[in-house]
Length: 110
Length: 112
Image (tube, rainbow over all chains, first blue to last red; front, side):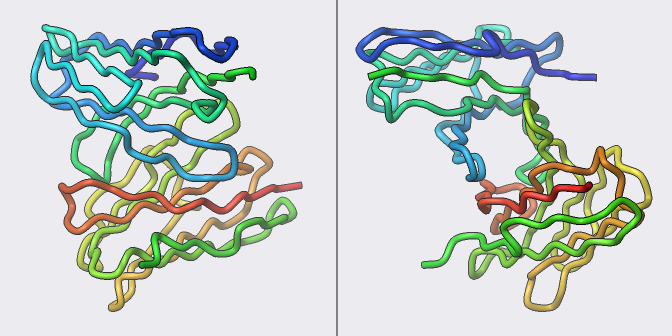
């Protein structure tokens, strides 16, 4: 049973466009993490959100945690080819026991 | 500083064989976790070890086992390999069992 649903599954856009990907669950998160994974590599942590309604920014990336702590979004402004990768959200029991969604595969074309 | 290192990077095995995958955590990290990532899916938790003791186990059959050594490195063993065991096996290390985890590049296992 997949506890985290990510959408869309695939997204292909042109360089310079904006995009938003989503992570949803029927249960409340104590915390939620976003990772980016490039082909042949392990996931790299981008951000952890903890408080309902929290917004965090990392350069062109904006992460939002829903007020009810059941959903989150990742918005990328002016996407670049270097943003290409698999974006994963994860719900954390503790750092070693994360439950991951199946991810959004993003392709940014030059 | 070296990150999490895994070996081998790629491996091809035949059905029914046994495989051992290895992971060296970041220096000073005492917790190691193993994940299986099948193509097109997110990582699935297999095991967590902290201070050489198993702290968690995911929903995997008994063919999967692991251990952690005194130097905090770890091995993941899989017996009686099935075609469905083909996946990227990821190791993650953290300072403690409840701190941020850092992933290695994974071992790509192909079972034929």
